[in-house]
Image 1 (cartoon, rainbow over the protein chains, first blue to last red):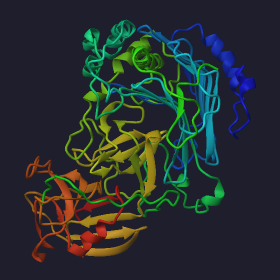
Image 2: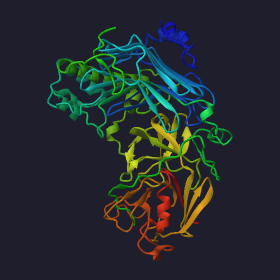
Image 3: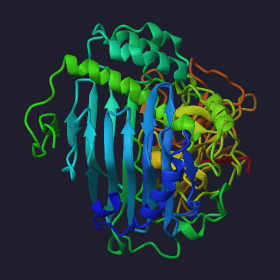
Amino acid sequence: MIDTSMKETSRVKTSKWAGAGAAAVGAATTAAVLLMGTAVASADEGDARASSAFGIKASTPLVSIAPVPYARYAGKPVSDELIGTDGSLAGAPFAVRLVTAEADEHSAESSVADLDVAGLLKAKLIRTYCEDGNGGLQIVDGSVLGIALPETPAPKVVVSVSPLLTLTLNQKDEHSDGTTTYTGLALDLVTAGVDPKAALDGATQGALPGLADVLDRPGLLGAKTVGDLTKALPLVGGAPLLSLTVGSATCGPAAEETPEETPEETTDEHPPAAVPVSAEIPEVSTAHPQAPSPTVTEFSLPVTG
Amino acid sequence: MASHSAVRSAPGQEENGSGGRRPGRGRVALLGWAVAGIAAVLALVLGAGLLVGGGQPASSPPGPAAAAAAVGRAVDVSSLPESTTFTTVDGAPKDPSPGAATDGRVVHPVTDTVVHDAPDGTPIARMPARQIGDTWLPVVGEQGAWVQVLLPSRPSSSTGWLPAADLETAVSPYVIDVHLGAKTLELRRNGQRVERWTVGIGKASAPTPTGRTFLLGAFSDAKQSYSPVILPLGTHSPTHDTFGGGPGTVAIHTWPTDDVFGTATSDGCIRVPADALTTLAGVPLGTLVRIDSA
C-alpha cells in the first residue's frame, strides 16, 4: 500500500491518500479522467515567492499542458488533486490513480500514485517534496522500460535510456528569490544531434496512426525515419519534441531569511482575483529580489528615432 | 531492482551505476515509447479536459461530450505567434488600468510559455524566455495560478495571462513616468522622484503613445549611431506600422544634439540627455513605464 510506504519527511501531510484511494476505486469504472478540485482555496492572492507544487506538466511542439494539479500557498495551505483511472486514447494507455499538489507556508509536496504510461513508465508513487528550502524525491516501485528507478535518487540523477531520451530525477534549482524547486521526474525527448536518417522500427510506426489522429498531423503516417518524425512535428525554437515533468515542489526557507515580510507584504494589498494589482501610491513588494538590469547587447531593431 | 546500468549521475554527482544503455536497438524501442508517451500525455489532457495550458480543474466530471469539446479546443501551439516587439498578437486583452501603478512585481518566464487571453482561457501566443536578453514583464493582475502581464507585442497596451508556475518573480522599485505635455521624464523609486529630465517626444504626426508599458531590454546598434545604447519599450508607434525597417518600436535613447530636448520632433521615441540614458540603463528589466499627456 502506498500509505505504508510513505515517510513523514515533510510537514505537508498526505493523510488524504486512504480516502482518495477509495474514491479512485470507484472512479476506475470510467474511461475518462475525473478531476476533483479539493475545495481548498485557490491561490487568488499571495506572495509569488510562496511555496507551490504541481503534479504533471508536459509540452510538445504542438501542445502545452500547464501544471496540473497546481497548488500555491496563499496565506493558508492550498491543495488540489486529480483523481483518475485508465484513460485510454488513440491506443496510448495512460493510467494514474491520484495526483495531488499541496503547498503550505514553507513546504510543498506533490504525489503521483499508480502511474502507468503505456506500460513503459511505471511507478507506485512519485513523491516530490520541499520543506524550508530542502527537499527531494521518493519513488516507490518505479521503472522506465523495465529499468528500476532508485527509490530516493541523489540530486540530478540522469537515467540514460537512449541518445534521444533524457530522464532526470530529483533536479534541484535554486532561484534568486530564495526559493528552491525540486523537480521529481523530467523526461525530454530531443532529436537534435540524432541522425535524421535513422529508421523507425515497426513498433514506432505502429504508434504513428494514433498520434497522427490525436495531433491532426497526417504527415506522421508516412514517417519512416527520425527525420520524417521531426518534419511532421516541427520543433519550435529547438524545443524538445516531448517534455514531461512528473512532480515539482517549490519552497523557501522559513522566517529568519525573510524578516521583511510584514505589513507591506503584497498579500494583503492585492485586490481579489482578476483585478489589477495597482494603487495610486505604489507599495513595492519587499518579498522579492530586485530584477536584473539589462545587459547591453548587439541587436538590430530599428526604433522610431 | 533491475539493472543499474542505465542509471548515471550528472557531472559532479556520484555514479549510481556504470555504463549506459546501448544505442541502436534500444533507441528504436525508446522512440516508440516516446511517441506513445506524447499520445499518452495528450490522452490525459484530452480526457481530463485540461487543454493547452489550462491548469484549473473542472468542476464536474467531463463526459463524452465534454471530452469531445475539449478535443475541439486543442490548439496547435506551434501555430501561435510569439509575443515580441516584432509581432502582433490578436485577441490580447487591453490593459485594464492604463496609467495605474503596480506593486512593482515583474516576472521572467523560466521557459517558453503560452500566453492566454484569460486565466485558463484561450491560448493566443507564445512568450519566449529570451528576446532582447531575458524577458521580464510587469505584473498588472493575478488570479489563482495565473498572472496578467503587459505584452511587448502589438497592439500597444495589450496584456496576456501566464501560468505562475512558469515564472520567476522579482521586483523593480522603479517607475518611469513620461509626461508628454510637460515633455519631462521622471524616474521614481519606491514612489519617490529620484530624477527629472526634459526630454524630446514624438511629433504630432507620429506621437509617442500613451499608456503603460515597460523596459524591454537594452541594445546597441551600429546602424543607429545617434545613441550608444537604446532602451526599447513594450509599445509601438500608433502611426508607423514599420519604421526604418523595424516594427515601429518606441524606445528611450539619447540624441547627438541638445536642441531636441523639450521638443516634439521625434517619430515616437523618447529622446533623453546622456546622463538620463546612463541612469535609465541601470533600471531593472520589466520596469513599468507610464506615458501620459500631462
